[in-house]
Length: 343
Image (tube, rainbow, N blue to C red; front, side, top):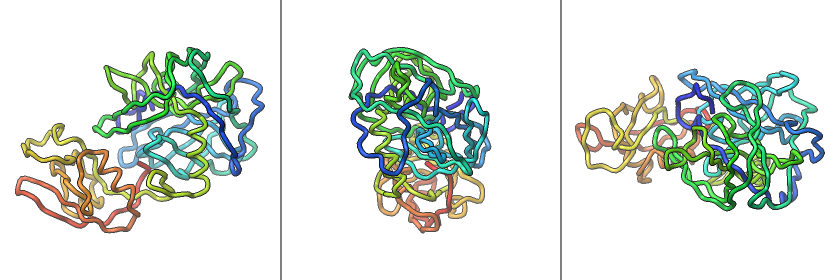
């Protein structure tokens, strides 16, 4: 999440996490003998599809051949992802192996990487009062910084929102008073020995929780939980939560109907189209900015989040029926989904 990125899900809040037993990590090799704080932490940079806007975040090396753990919101919407290893300065091209929107976890694979140093993880439970250090690419500067604090609560549930009105409810989080910053997302929360106890994810802002903004109250995903998702992704275990492979693309940006700037005043629940990608699937099907999507393939749309959730269950090339409302009333059109960036 970078201060120069002003697009959906680029800026996710940060969080501290407690670590329970990690369990058997059969496929991914996790180092447990890190000599110094910072080993295995990397810089993630992205370019957003269709806009080429830049964004940044942080990641952790969980496999010496280039498996990277980060937040889903760090890579959401990206058409190009690169990862830089501090110290060596070597930059790799990365592809998305898979992601879990609900848990805000993603796994990347670096091209032509080998013998990378991996993070060390803590398998003991994290408790309130534990001294922790958040390490990350604060402000998207391309260098790692640290912020020390303590764990102030565990087992927290928050609903974090983005700039388009989409939101995700994250559970089992750990709260910290470490001063996490934008672009620390995907980075580790370390104990005093330099072991990872959680992955920074969210922060409170203006009475709510945002995928953005610096805050004195941060939140993180327990590393055990994040690694469990990573194992499912690595194994190719697609599910209602875990997405593997290419992502279906509708070609729109959406907002809540109350946020629609186009002058229509319908008493209609749904998601308003804020923008349409020129030449994209939605545009080819006749959808345009200002239309309000009320269902996709018979599934009711109540918010921008439900649009994303429904489309994530589809495959590129699949045809879907979209019911929408415009100035003329209610209509239905068929959209052939394309292949697009991760959600």
